[in-house]
Image (cartoon, rainbow, N blue to C red; front, top):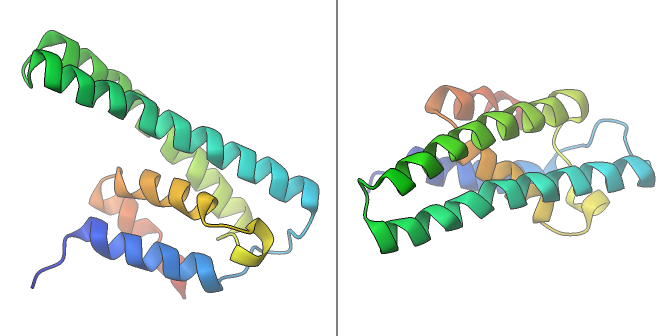
Length: 128
């Protein structure tokens, strides 16, 4: 069975999130800020994708409405990649013990999955 890169990224991201350190940032205020930032990223990632699905169902794949929404989503994805990269480069992978749930990992995972393969592979080294 051949696994798609997104599936591999999903498994690795959840694994890394569960066991990696959140580089000297046990501050409750900082964790709260990052959690909030990642929640905003998650919401931005999913909102337009839901609009796209509705437009696909209503207007079809080749409609102008769908094309406009994909352009909007491309901009959102680019912005989210910058934001997630900044968080990961500055603080590393968040620890489950600091964040209390997997919502931060889900946000990071979605952004990484929606990036190209080069972007996905950029974060493999952080697992070590």
